[in-house]
Image (cartoon, rainbow, N blue to C red; front, top):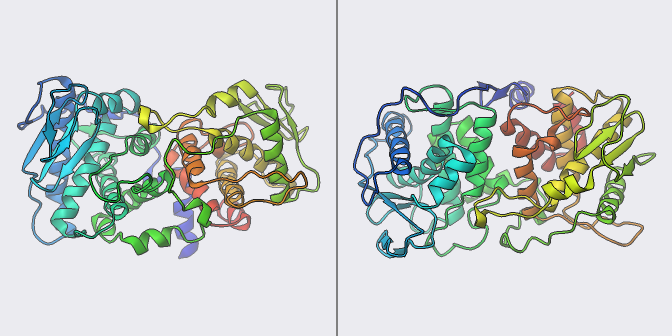
Length: 456
């Protein structure tokens, strides 16, 4: 049983039990017109899209809620739109000043959903697509569902509330990906990748006491909760509590669980020849190859037995990691969610180079370096490497390179965008970021032997 479960989980052609598909993601061409009253609306296209998503999500919960909880789902009492770029926008939820607050939220005081049409929804639409808007609002409706299902109470910690809401959003979007929605379509490759990227970028602050950086969890936490819902059902989401979150952290070093610092305090390291040499030294002490691969910071050098995968490539014929330093610096330049951009930083770059080192490690094991299994095995082994880099590794040089939970967020973002961490020696990856993250996480909480076993 366990072997078959692992096979299903790590199948490169499946995503949450569905086929890894390409195709339409967004509003269906024959979608019905949105219905309902939006308080405060300007009548524009942004609010029409958000209302269409509200219609879809409420229809989903009307049919799905009774399958997991007693009684029927009751629609929220009100839906509201505001413009966070307008100083006269006023307040929502009784006391929250909305000017300068690009957000979407559920208000328990009056059982309402609100969203910012001035910045948040337009940016979600621009950078992540129309279906990502449905994903953002599905998270907020997750809070409405947990209130109706009584799966949280007044003392429930913020991270539990948020993880449940991420999970409930996953349940809804699995339904969309199955083709059940009359309004939206979602493919399970780049479409789902964009939804996941939007989910970890468009974080929603709350007015609760635990509104501290990281109170909602890391990107790894949030994607993990979403995946639980996408793989499971609403009852699974309602069962998420602090103990369940802790169980998901089993095997993860404490240094990668401590998400106490904000986006602006990540300890970023410049991507230079010197820092890459430090990375190579660190990986050598973790994996102890009989002979370390060579690092060449000279762009893409011709290779006899592999295609280049800029900005970092591995050439088996010469056992060389070739790095295009300006290209690597570009993907390692720090951005954060405060600017409504997908997080990236030094570990977006370091994890890519690490993945090329993992190909060199696999070459010494005599396994294939091409194909989907090799790509996922590489992601898994990169997770093993990053796990070991969560504590200082004794180095002959006396220097150290230590990763934090914030660094993991940067690696997770990379798995959704450039894909190289989960790619083979030709730079070919698997179609779904969902699967790439599963493979990477399996290494974070496991070991190298498990990577070879899961991805033979």
